[in-house]
Amino acid sequence: MLSLTSFVLAAGVFTLVPGLDTAFVLRSTTISGTRTGFCAALGITLGLFVWGASAAFGLTALLAASKLGFTIVKWAGAIYLFSVGIRLLLQPRGKATPGDALRGVTLSGWQSFRQGLTTNLLNPKVGIFFITFLPQFIPHGVNFVAFSLLLAGIQVLLTLSWFTLLILMTVKLGAFLSRPATVRILDRATGGIFMAFGLRLALERQG
Image (cartoon, rainbow, N blue to C red):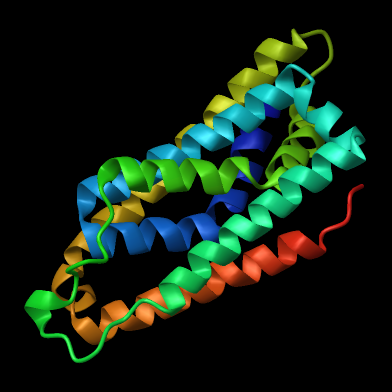
């Protein structure tokens, strides 16, 4: 029980740290609505669970030990993040009216889900985080795979709960966030964050 409590506290702090996933959920909700925001959140959390399950079964350890595998996933992720970031930064805006502000830049629920999932799966550092983070909270004498899956599930629930709160807060500010100027700023900021994380991922070294 102490291990679970410690994990929830540590994972909760990790979840609350703003980053790429938070920016993507906020943008998806603001630009495309609540449903799309939840789809983005589900894609991201599914990616988290896939990495967590991979760590539980030892697959992530193989990636961490393989220089070629790590490099391939790393560069695929960096290129993907850069491409999304550039697309957001170069998104034409012009002098749009409030009614036109969101036209042509919305994502469907499936697109948002897929982008959230892809962004997460193409970041090998997430997998390496799981294989270094989870074992610290697994007590001796328990089934390693089962307990690791439990911890990964808790991480997913914490993340999904936090995203739900963010989405509901964003809905409350919908009138302000849907203004053309706000949309432009949000796109530029999100694009910059994606590119920054892409650069950071490209510069990451294994080990």
